[in-house]
Structure formats: structure tokens, C-alpha cells
Image 1 (tube, rainbow, N blue to C red):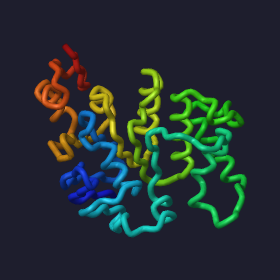
Image 2: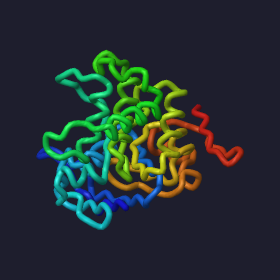
Image 3: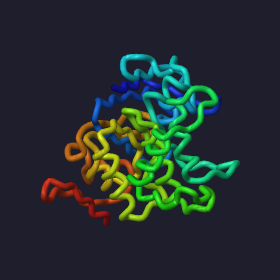
Length: 249
């Protein structure tokens, strides 16, 4: 469904991505992990076109995503970026309604189908009671859940998320990733928590210094040696009841 082919990206001062590649098949939950500065967020920003690669290509459903119009991309791909500053205030419902714009003609207003999609998406993330609340009044975790609801309301086959568990407490982290895992969507996400990556990802790609280090199933890749190489800390990695556990020293 998505193929990233040898993406190179950098500024005038430094090259950040050195020919990074990955592939996400339909229905997969794929994670990108690596230490701070490894290029995780930069890679995702190139995929959803906040940044433009110097070389390489990104193929979505057999077509170059780099050549699609904004609407064509939005019809196929929803994005939950890391939280940025909001210049104008909207209600929670209005923010989620923004996810419906690829389905609307110019100046077309929301219909009943749109309103039901907004309510259903908010219910999925447990935020339906805050429909009329100011988005700027929410906590960081609440804002994150609203942005995930907006992506769900977009009704695309694929969602890209950059650190979706930021600002969420442990319970909300598990509920959010479980929701995404069971949504039927194809998911590509950057994660900083190895335990969550091990629990939810079908496959992971490991970045280090803007390069592909390795990729595969979490149980095959996550090891004491990998933790040491990426984060310079000691850890014991063990398997219990077909789940990976990491005990940091």
C-alpha cells in the first residue's frame, strides 16, 4: 500500500535522511523507532509532504504520492502530527469536522452524514461529551485524542501518526493504540516507547543517524543489544506468554 524508496532529505547545513526505505502493506500496523535525532519525525513529514525530499519517491496505492494533489492525498491518507500551536480557537466538534473536508465540494456545508461521522469518531476515543468544548481549553492528552478522532472521521484506509501517545497517561496509551490496532486501518506510526512498539506493531523499522538500521517483527529485533545500541542503556529483554517485556537496568 505504501512504499518509501530511498528518501534523502536535508537542509543546507546537514543531511538528515540518507536514503531511507520502508514498506507498509494493507492492514498492517508498522512502527518506526529510534533515538531522538534518528530521523523518525523527519521521515514521516516527508511522507505526508510537510517536507520535500531531495531524492527518492513515495508510492501510495501504486501512484507517486509526491505528485498527488492535496485532496487526492487527503482522500487516501490521514495524518496525526505532533501537536503544534493553534492560532485560532475552534470547538472540539469543529476540529474533528475538518477531517471531512476531502469529501466536500467547495463551500459545501456539513450534512447529517458528516455530523454522525464526527460523533462516532469522538465516541471511539471517549471524547463525545466534549463536542462543544473549546479545543484550546483541553489538556495535551485530550487534544491528542481529538486529533486522532479527526483522522478517523476522514475515513481513509491509512493513518500516519507521529508519536501518538505523547501527553497520554499509561491507560490512555494502551486504549489509543488498541483502538488503532483494531480499527481495520493501515497504520504507520513513530513510537519512542519500545514496550508499546513490541506490543502493538506487526513490524518495526529501526532508524539510527538517518539510516535504516534494521527491520522486522518486534520479537525478532528487540533485544538487549539493540536497546544498548540505540539508547546506551542496559536492559533485559525476555518473552513471556508470547509478549515481549523490557526490564531497564
